[in-house]
Image 1 (tube, helix red, strand yellow):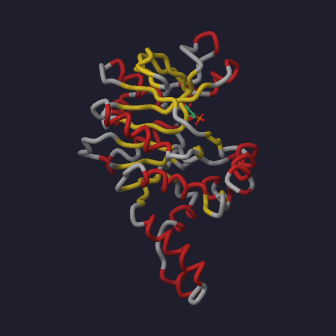
Image 2 (cartoon, helix red, strand yellow):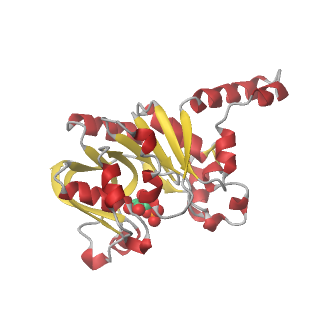
Image 3 (cartoon, helix red, strand yellow):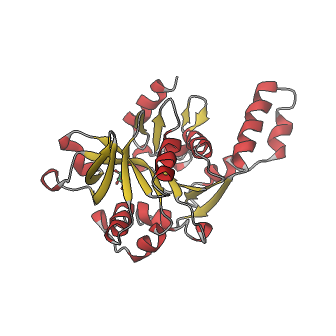
Length: 268
Ligand code: G1P
């Protein structure tokens, strides 16, 4: 299974730090946030993790590129060698593609399409600015639901207060069992009175590879950007089953300084 981590955003809420340290590289419990997300993807069974990044954020690539010179520098320092070994093990599964223009989340995911060509299995998408703290890795739970429903698409959901629905992709559907819906509609950032529910798309997706064709066919949507939500809605319209699963655990939005402060406290 392939996993995609979109991490090409400019991180403007972290300026000026983001000029040299991308938000995904900010430390959380001793590792950059994005390493925790790569580890979540691997724990879910991903064999390859494709990070979509931008040439303006070279430190993410540098971090995941094994380099013997770094090992030589810490010769004899057991803890540093162990940390490097662990990172190098993870890095073997990581590759990179660039998003050269910031045209939206859907456009970022589409940049990974050539790297996923010929995939029959669903692909995992884990947003690079969302960390999920949970006893069982979040993505693994969603992959299990996908398998149980014949490799269907599954979108991770969380309940949000009505006044915040316009900040998220919002799902409508029919309950299948506790915490699981069969979706019939997804809308990106609807006004509260047009939202199909209070269930928000929350940073983790297991997607039928047909999503790439749907993304290619999507025009700019909300905010003038190519939206992943619109491509999933297109899959629904084409008759592909999509489930929505409220996952256990807490999602942290590390894309802004307040969210980052919370995550640092939670992962102490
Ligand atoms: C993105 C998605 C949105 C989703 C949100 C949180 O929005 O477009 O559907 O609800 O992430 O996972 P963004 O936060 O990038 O504006």
